[in-house]
Amino acid sequence: MERTFVMVKPDGVQRGLVGEVVSRLERKGLKLVGMKMLWIKKELAENHYAEHKEKPFFSALVDYITSGPVVAMVVEGRNAIKVVRNLVGATNPAEAAVGTIRGDFGLDVGRNIVHASDSPESAEREISLFFRDDEILDYERADEPWIYEEK
Ligand code: DAT
Ligand code: MG
Image (cartoon, rainbow, N blue to C red; front, top):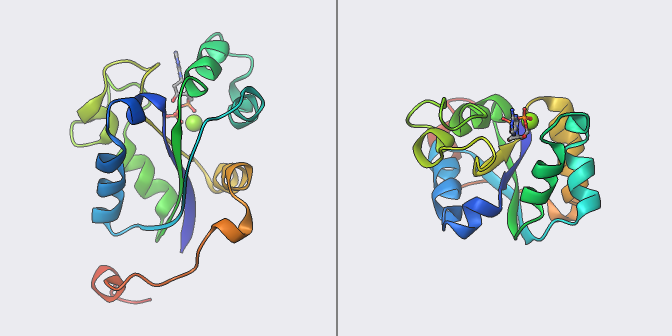
């Protein structure tokens, strides 16, 4: 089993898409093992997006992600990192496939609704930036035998 970090960004919260995003993850069979609402401060935003600090869009990105509350999640499942990236869709919603979250709900790369970790290294880093160990819960979902053939 793999864990990944997912976040409904301020535009997703403001547009009432939290339930839609969570619902798509749940229906896929992924398990929510951590969830919180928070308003990201500048320092955390700069840290979270550190890989982009030399990019021309960095300051706009930090302003956007700190512009309102977000919903942060830890999501668990087999191949969760890749599976969630596929559910989220391409970075630019204008190019994201229909059926993905960004493809169905967005138009602008600067308002792309949701974040998801892109690798095991970033998942580990991002989960630890947003969650303490005791905020991540270990439990079985009742439908697991109907989602996985083998444990
Ligand atoms: P992703 O969020 O798909 O992992 P990323 O890590 O390359 O994409 O970029 C992080 C965020 O930065 C992305 O969600 C939106 C913003 N961004 C990326 N490329 C951009 C660009 N060319 N112009 C404006 N914003 C951009
Ligand atoms: Mg990224």
